Image 1 (cartoon, rainbow, N blue to C red):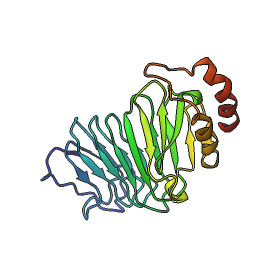
Image 2: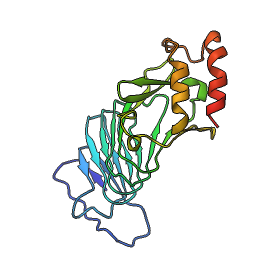
Image 3: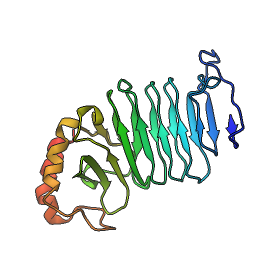
Image 4: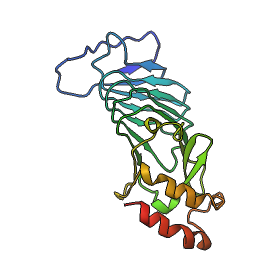
Length: 217
């Protein structure tokens, strides 16, 4: 379904047995959590506008455009990808098992999570020694060194429910939540590498590489 106006209506009722995953592609803010769209699984925002997308009780795939979007999921096991721009991902369900996709070139995204068994999936092109972890206020910030790309998990340090249970790289390595603080503490003694510095300086490697190797598995 293609939506280009707030007046456009989509009818796809929950339980419609058509055997396919249905998708709305919208250039305006859109919610599939409506009476007539409960059968839609996927929502993709198009164009470059700062528009928002809202999921429903199904397991949705919510995809942003190149603008600054807010993507809000429902009760299903959702997959979020903000895309370019400074995006806000909002997972209000305390029981859903969600996946958040982010990586190099994806911009500065923020996540508000509320529970479940969730995963941050980092796209190809980022290795364990290129992710910088910081404790900023109540938040956990992960950034790709040498870039402005970062992923902030709001209120990580306030409640366990706000955390993601694992961060997984494209090479299969994973960092579980209980080991995050080991890297945060190790990196706290250093200044993040400068813009354009895509590898850790030699003196950083001496101290950090053993910690990185011990905690990413």
